[in-house]
Image 1 (spheres, helix red, strand yellow):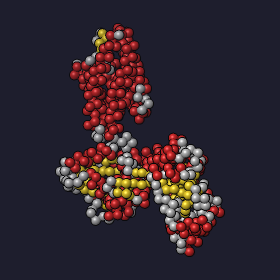
Image 2 (cartoon, helix red, strand yellow; image 1 turned 180 degrees about the vertical axis):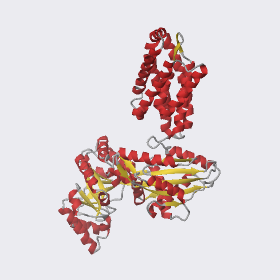
Image 3 (cartoon, helix red, strand yellow; image 1 turned 30 degrees about the vertical axis):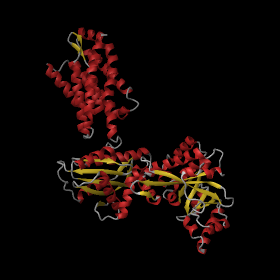
Image 4 (tube, helix red, strand yellow; image 1 turned 90 degrees about the horizontal axis):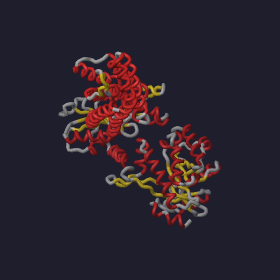
Length: 617
């Protein structure tokens, strides 16, 4: 019992030191890999020395401390480099105290380091998750066996006394100490690191990166702000699994990290973009950087990547802006980088553009939309309006189409034709599209009776459709909101399908199996291939409003009539969009169009104005 109490005292002293180390660690988060491993080795080395200075004496000159547990954990968390640094501290302390110690003790410490290194290379990525207790427990037990095994080298009298006094204590205290030391060092460190570092890429989160740049702005430190777009990454992500996506992003981030010059930092934004801040190490002037500097980075990141035994190729577009100490804010500087990047992407492949005031107003406006759109969802700037659809021959309400609206405090009301393409290019359409689908279904749940046959139409983009998890997401939302699948109608455009027809067909069939209705939107403006119309499981065709608006013209009237007859022969339901005049209504009825929506019936309405229409059904 006495030895256990002494080991508890030893453990408590080491834990106090680790708590101090947890306060120091955040300052090392941004250091490179080798310096961080060295710091881990130093901290564990000091902890080992402390453990040796507060030993538990057994008798006959034999003592036991927790330094071997510290040694094993240092090797497990920090790898060989950390183990070497920790071993240096432990050996140096022994020499300082009068000698290296008994050979059995030295061998036990080295074996503990080997145990830690084996675990480091085996499954060290799991340290943060479900094995936070299992692995430290196993390490503690192995180190206990390690100590007892090498105790066989101790002379007979001391060995018998030592085993009798502390063998049971080792198998109690070593695993317990291993679990506690691991928690107070690695788990707490990881928790702090994840707050500021993207675990997948190893780069700072965008919030931390922004704070670092804002500090430079506050100090009037000149810098380059560079925005990289990984062209082709979106296609690779769409066509492959999440694991392939993560591997590719890790390799890109690793190349970028290795390239970064001193006093520079980088972060990954959502989608396929990275931000880089390059400053003079002394912080006094802009680094002298020529075009070759960025071409070197483009060449580095454009070299082929090996992912899952396959070659992946990407190209890089680069937008650059400079800060020279002017009275500017982050929100003024960042859009400049986006403007330059947009110009680079429109100029061709692997292009680099430096921001200047003469870049077109169109690009600047588009850039502002992209910048502000990234926070529109979080700041509740998006809302839905609903345009009623009516059966033409009975006048009955068929349902509603959910239409996305964006009101920005500075840009005002932004047209969907302006921000939806931006959302698709940046993949922001994925979270936004999920929000739209969920909000629309929740509206149906709130105000539409469960027995109603009204249909809710929601537009989805190609980016959403090609995401292999999309059918599961639709199923989840339907279950959460209680909306019957047959009352949800998903609308897709022709261009969406033709980008990847084979994958789109599989996804549409999965949605069809859920019981969801499918509609082809803007029919007549794209490919209009009879082959894919017969092949894909659509229930409804929506005639584009451009054909309806000119229906008074005899030529256009015949075109619209032929399109309706063509779709009827394929046994599709027909919806006419953009109905605005009675003349158009007469002709649509004549051609036996099934449904219509447009300003002649109603403009898109906010949710609170739908109830009277629903109650009248």
